[in-house]
Image 1: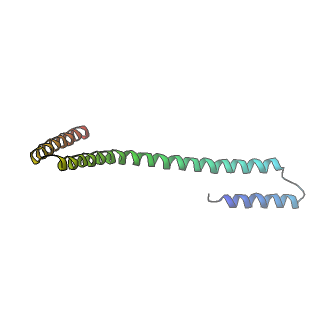
Image 2: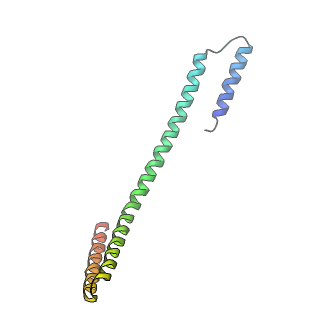
Image 3: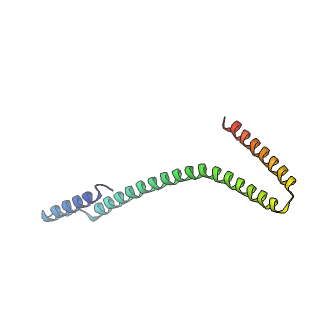
Length: 115
């Protein structure tokens, strides 16, 4: 973090000056200062990580719905392609028409949900 090394330098400088003048700072106070500083650093890092995780979750949730829909469409297309290879041409046309009508219904439903 910005200024942390300055705090360490300041503590060392104060300690050295106090020792030179014959007064030593109690070690417990130095330990407590350092512990508080480290806790503050950890709290800031934890807050940043939580925010990044929340942002990532929000972005992945938005992307998931699109990915799932795209995957379903691709799977349906794969099924239709497989059926095309195995069925006569008239059945293929029926399947395509029914798939298109299902797709239109799905899109209309999504528009209604969004609107």
